[in-house]
Image (cartoon, rainbow, N blue to C red; front, top):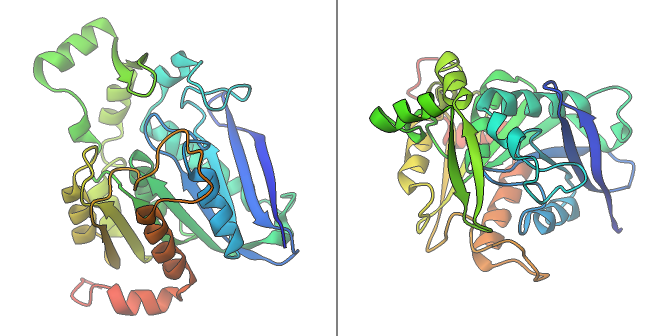
Length: 299
């Protein structure tokens, strides 16, 4: 059966900006386990090989959803370019958590257009890089999530902010700029980003969230990742109550993919990650918990 796609569906975000959603699935009328994918920092749903990844999951019988965070800097008209740099500057972690909640709630609505295609008892999150941290926090808050998978995930948000004189200069100017390495575009971060983190520090503590997880957690990380240290995968493994660690030899931050991805096949490193992810998703949660759960926990 051919794979069906619904591209660039616009749903309302909670912060006056739309969320753009893609659905990829086999239209056979049968309820399927759901995968919701969160892109990372300076990312977007159509980056690199994410579309082929979605096709692979759909082919394996999953209902796959990927989306653009409402303030990631793209627009519905230009979903792969950072043309709304003011929105990028206004983004923060709590907005991304709100966006993910909005997407989860949307897919579970009784009048969801493809309600007959989704198994509402089997909702799973996959997050890449910064999106991984967002997924850890959301999975600790949202009891309808069945399994969590993080690809090259961060384990801490606070350490990514500047300190000392750099932080003071940011507060004084109200904005600092980072370079998008892909096209050398200057992208702003308004000081509200740090202020929002500080005001929500408890909620945005990935360590605290990981320790509260009550579901199996697959942690995939490349040994040659220069963007997020492999030690951060070690942190998540240490904190999660039922973790499975997947270290990928010689893989970089995006497991051998890049943007744009113009090949029809995937690199062996990313294929390996997807094979293991599919196996993890198809394994009964109780079995995974029994195998990887911490028998020395306080419970």
